Amino acid sequence: MLDEIFAELRDNNEETLQGLGRELGKLRTGRASLGMLDGVRVEYYGQVVPLNQVAALKVADPRLITISPWEKPMLILIEKAISSAGLGLNPSNDGVILRLPIPPLTGERRQELTKVARRIGEEHKISLRNARREANDTVKELEKESEISEDEMHLSLIHI
Image (cartoon, rainbow, N blue to C red; front, side, top):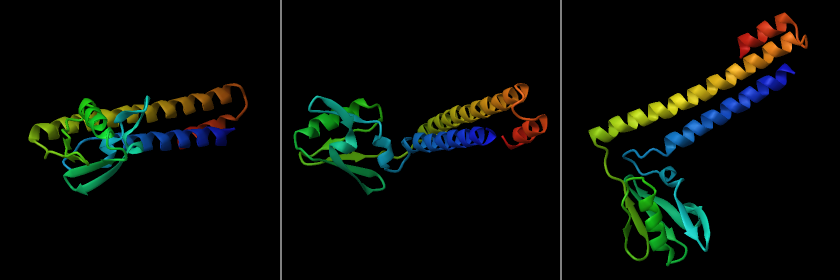
């Protein structure tokens, strides 16, 4: 019974930490990262699909991402999708590939990134706290229903 609670808490914590990593990976810093484009969706034959399913993405150098669509007509659709994604990036279309230059960080942008990273971190901390509180409440409820002893409850609460 307690093992199930601990396993569920552990899984929830791992999932939350992986989510934190994904969210922080999407932030636009001064370096090119394919994670920045994870949220970009492109219309492809009536379906809205992730960008990486219609084009080859490559980090050409630390400040440039190149996007090679598998079909030439997709260039314009990909360009529109990136522009409308709100990333603050302006793709350059040469008719064959899209070049996505990453501008260097300004002092103002650094401060903004700090605020965003703090907010993301705080959201994930709250998620971890809520999961711990739920596990604590479950253990206390088991003790009230006499399914576990008081000693087991106290030991479990120490480990949560």
